[in-house]
Length: 106
Image (cartoon, rainbow, N blue to C red; front, side):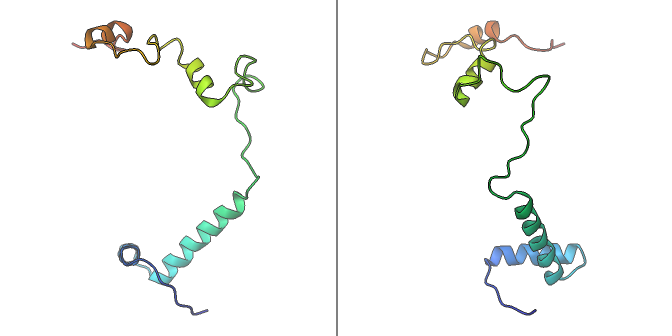
């Protein structure tokens, strides 16, 4: 089927360049990209969420079950962060004490 489409000049030029590099035509490359996009849309239909990935259990612990993302993230990094939110930033020498390097320099 023959049709006409309008696309941005830079997109056309980039597609032409890629088609030349791959020794194919603009048409073949455009069809391949459209097929990829449409196949991806069919796999990711609205409401079709990927399965929840859990490690060694059945999801979040009771501590985090009813928390929002900010609370979960704060809980995850609680042991690493010893700085009170809203407090003045520590001096660089204090940062070294709070966050020792993970490897030694020689």
